[in-house]
Image: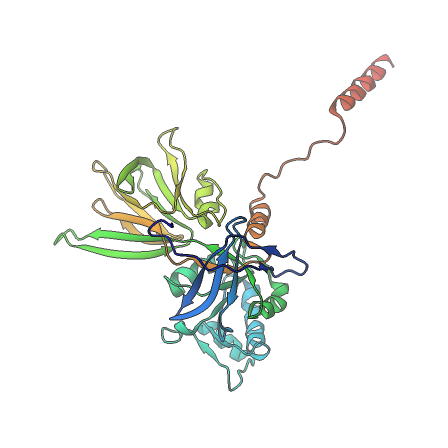
Length: 393
């Protein structure tokens, strides 16, 4: 029996799935769990996760008809490429395309014209629910912006092409865009996927004038950061796990990260790297005032409450996925738990293979100078022998 609060995943596909690279071997799914990805009141895809290997796959329930094209305004290559990508989506794939005002204007300037049965329009609140697929041309920052600012709780599936500076979460290279998109919109293929769990953040802010409480909610893909900011003093915070005091933080701050965010600020603060298939949340101190305060990995079922300690002199600055969302005042509190709405991205090969590749390529993980070949004792004997010959001469 599944524990309360967890999704009832019971539907199983007894077949393999393939990535978006030619020649990738097909893996049979064993004991898989699945769920339906919904957006705008529509069921878009069925997503399954292999219980043994942890890899995920998904299949369209209906063919996508409307695509949101997003480009990074910090990338000249993305700015220049967007009109051509829009033309490909409109003409060859016969998809309706939504985008921001500047991208649509650039498409019109480049003579990109939509046929009568498709459209090229500016994204707004009225047509946002029509999006079936997001095409991302940029880096990690653009993907975070799409999830947090463009959508919110529910996010359509994303195919991300790396045109940014790092591209840790963008597995596809831009030169492969056309064959990848042709395959992505296919309904008769089981697509490899990366299911990125998110955190749900609730902020309870107390109004000092009438003692009322207002609630503010955020969906978090990467991390929640509480820090002292420009204040010269340390942050003093209390962290409760399921209403039990976990620890008192006296440090520059603390990071609560998802597995996706484990390779961001948390990693810089000496936190562990966590595979995206691991259902967990990470608590990582920032420059703690104690040598024994080590990072900890907590199960996703736990609920964290964070507030200023009773004796705290000040609150803390609060950032969500790199965006400032104000301060945590002395009488405010945070409630952090696992979100019911993950972000599902198309994978190049598989969730695991893409993550390992990003760790090696982007973080240069464990790259060291190679050891000299040969037997070290033989090399030393030869060097000593050469030294004796030189000395005798």
